[in-house]
Length: 311
Ligand code: Q46
Ligand code: ZN
Image (cartoon, rainbow, N blue to C red; front, side, top):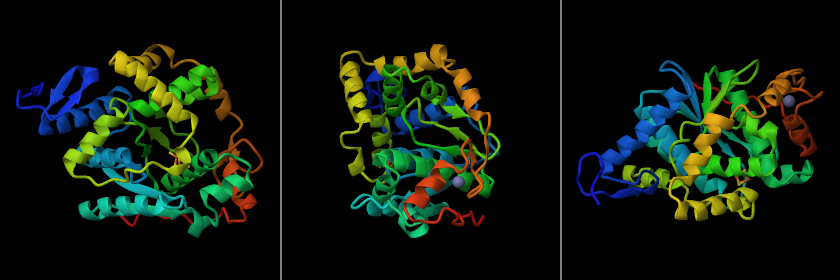
């Protein structure tokens, strides 16, 4: 197979595009897919300060790398989740990446800074671990971004992630989640804009990007992911994609083109009645926000000072 762009021998095949690429043209393809997503969905401008949610995995490190190559002012934020055998090496990969490129990586560690980890927080708040984890991460990314004056938080959700979440939301016809499932969520009083610049790139493309770029990343998945519903949806979509290459992209892109207004009213209603949490200042519709409740139940302190960029 030859590179679609320059006709040199191809090293990566992207079946969805029925195309092969040589190393340099593949890296260029990834950058241009991110540029296109940013432009199409008006994710951010050249002067925006970007906070990248960095887990140490392939997607977030590739995203950070691409945004910096495209000229964005992008710092990283890594959150230590206290998950045995996973959080230690993930943090190491994130730190090594930032150190090698002279980039700024902010860090928050749930056990050291808030007195709980994903498992104990989940048990105290009677949630499944991924729910406690997601709540903690969303809250901390939002607070660090708002307090640090970042314009936007960028996450490494790729096409496979978004198609799997979409399948789950459609199977339940969860309109509130469908309304929030866009590549850009506008900011508001107390929360930053959130963007997903990798929505045009698949999981295998991100792994290939890291390998070809020499980016070491945490290959092991989080042990808590085993058995979660999203993995099942991903597997189901992979079976369909195997038979009909491009099905995943047309499922997700069709939603963006024709179905993304689903639940728009629900989303607007959710933002009404928001007020600052008396404990941490985050916008909430309850007396105290869900994060502060979780931290208090887990015996920690939600009023911890968050890290601020030194630049
Ligand atoms: S890190 Fe957290 Fe994921 Fe692990 S506990 Fe679940 S949500 S699976 S992205
Ligand atoms: Zn709060």
